[in-house]
Amino acid sequence: MATKTIEPKAPALVRAWDWITETQVWTSIFRHTAPINDKNRVLVMLSNVFLHMHPVRLRKSGVRLRYTWCMGGISFFLFLVLTFTGLLLMFYYRPTLEYAYSDIVGLREHVPLGIMREMHRWGAHAMVITVWLHMFRVFMTGSYKPPREFNWNVGVIMLVLTLLLSFTGYLLPWDQLAVWAITVGSNMARATPLAGYEGPGAQFMTLGGVPLVHQADDARFALLGGTVVGEGALLRFYVLHCVALPLVIGFLMAVHFWRVRKDGGISGPL
Amino acid sequence: MTALKSFIDLVADPRLFFAMTTVALVLVVWKREAFSSNRWGWGLMVLLAIFFGFGLTDENFVKIIAKPDNVPIVALIFLLVFFTWYSMREAVHNDRRIAAGKPPVEKDESDRVWTWPDLVYTELISMVVCMVVLIVWSILLEAPIEQPANNANTPNPSKAPWYFLGLQEMLVYFDPWLAGVVLPGLIIVGLMAIPYVDKNPNGNGYYTFRERKAEITIFLFGFVVLWSSLIVLGTFLRGPNWNFFGPFEYWDIHKLEALTNVQLSEYIWVRGLGMALPDNWFIREMFGLALTLFYVVGLPVLLAKKGLVKYYEKLGPTRYYVAVLLFLSMLSLPVKMLMRWVFNLKYIVSIPEFFLNI
Ligand code: HEM
Image (cartoon, rainbow over all chains, first blue to last red; front, side, top):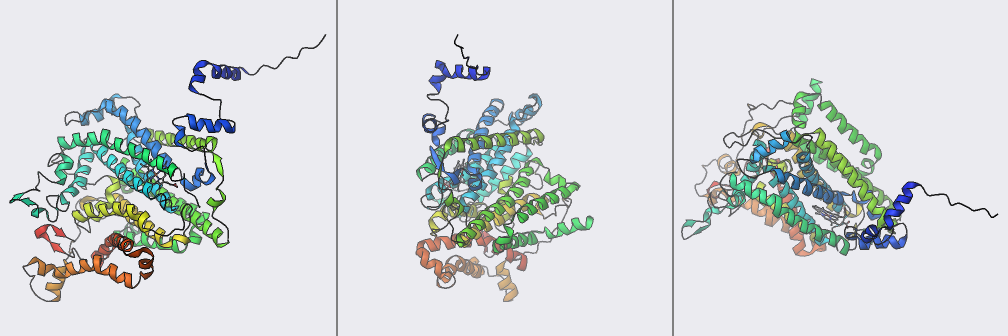
C-alpha cells in the first residue's frame, strides 16, 4: 500500500491571511501581491497614489537619517497631524468675542482625557522647529545649489507661511497670552515705511491734501480689520488660519515634493 | 550654590551672552577638528542637561523654563547644539576623506536602493516615533490658557510668540520700522537670494566645510548666533519692561535700568562742536545720513576694490552688490549693538519729524 504523504497544514493565521488576500475585495484594492520581489517593488510604487510621490529607487545616501535628518518628512507629517487635529478643534470652536475663550476653556473642562488642543499646539511649535532644522540641513549639504534653487525658494515661502500659520493660530484662544502676543507682533505693521501710520514717510502719502495713511487706514488696519486686536482681527486670523494659509502651504508642498523629484531626487554628489 | 548662580546671572548679560555665542561659533569653526569628536558632542549635551537639571532646583529658573510655551525652546537649544555639532562632524569627516584623495561618503552611497522597503520603513518608523513623542508631550504638558483677553490690562512683559522674540529683541537696538518690517523682509529676501548669489559649485549634495568655509560660517552666524540665540535671550532673559534678568533672578517689575542713550547728532553738535543742535533736520542729521549712506553704498564699493576683490571678480557686479548689501544688513545688528554698548549710542540718524530713526 502506497503511503500517503500529508502536507503539514500552514498555521491558522497564515491560512486566514491567504484567504483574505485572495478575496475579490482585497484584489480589487491591491492589484498585485506584496512587494517582496523586484517586480512588485516597482508596482507598489507606481500603483499607489500615496507612494507614487516617491521614486521607485533612490540613492542610498538619500534614505539615510545621517543625510536628511528626516526633517522635511517630519515637517510634512506634523502638518498632516495639525490638519487633522485642527479639523477636530474646529467642531468645538467659534471665532467670536462671545464664545472663543469659553469654547477653549470648555474643551479643557468637558472633554475628558482630551489632548487634541495639546497635540495641535505642541505640534505647531514642533513644526516651526523642524522646518528650521530642515532648512539648516538643506543648507549644510549645499542642496540649494543648481538645479535646486527654485525649490529652496519654495521652501523659504513655506517657512514664512509656517510662521504665519503659527502666528494666526496663537490669537484664537482669545486669552491674555494670545491677544497681547498678537498686539506686540502686529504693532510692527504700523511702522511699515509709507504704509503704516507711524512708518517713515507715511505723512507724504496724501492725495489732494487728504492723508491716505492714518490710524484707521494703514498696513496694521488691513491686518487686524480694526485699530485694535478685536473682533475683526479674530475673524480675519481665523479664516487665514483655518482656510487660506493651509490651502496655500498645501499647494506649495505639492510643488515642493514634485520638484524634489524633478530636480533629480534627493541631492548627492554628481 | 548662590555664588555660582550669581556668577551665571552675571555672564548671561546680553553683552556677554552675545559675545560668548559669537566666540563659541568662532571656536567651532576654527577648532572644528576637535569639536567634531564624539567626546565634544556628547559632552556638550551632558553639560546642557546638567545645567538645566541644576536650574530646575531653582524657583525663579523653573518659573520661566516651565512655562508651557517655553518648553519647546528648551528642546530647541538641545536640538540646535546637537545638529550644529552633527553637521560639523559629518563635514569634517568628509573633508578628511577628500584630503586623503577619497570621495565624500555620499559618493560611495550613490547606489540605488529600493524605496520599498528601505525608505518607506524608515518613514513609517519616523512617523511612529514622532506620534509617540507628540502624544506623550501632550499628556504631560497641558496647553496654557490664561485670563480672558482684556484690552485694559497690559501684561508686563508683553511678548510676541517665541519664534519672533529674536525680532522683538532687535527692538532694543532698532525702531519698529527696521526691526519689525525692513530687516525681517531682508531676512526673507536674503534667504531667497542665497542660491543665486552663491556661485561656488563645490559642496553640492554632501557635507563639507573646507569647500564652503565662508558660506557656512556666515549662515551659522545668522541662524545660530543672531536668529536662535536672540530667541533664547528674548525668551528666558528678558523680563518686565524688557529689562535683562539672569536665569536665576527674580523678575522684579520695579527693576530700574538707567537709560542714558545719546543720539549721534548730539555727540557731534553738542559734545563735539560745543554748539546747539541745528533746527533744520537735514543739517542736524547730515553726519548720520552720510554715515548710513557710506555703509550701504560706499562700503560695498570700497570692499570691491580692497578686501573682497576675489569675490567681486568671481561673482560679477550684480551678484556681488546684492550679496554684500544683504550681508551688511545682517551685520547692521551686531554693529548697532556694539555702538550701543560701547558709546551708549541711540540713533545714528534721528528724524522724528518723519518717524525715521536709524
Ligand atoms: C513646510 C515646510 C516644508 C516641508 C513639509 C518640506 C518637505 C520636504 C521633504 C519631505 C523633502 C525631501 C527630503 C528631506 O526630507 O529632507 C524636502 C527637500 C527639500 N527642501 Fe523642503 N520642506 C519644507 C520647507 C523647506 C524650507 C524652509 C526649505 C529651504 C529654505 C526647503 C528646501 C528644500 C530643498 C532645497 C529640498 C531638496 C533637498 C535635497 O534634494 O537634498 N524646504 N522638503
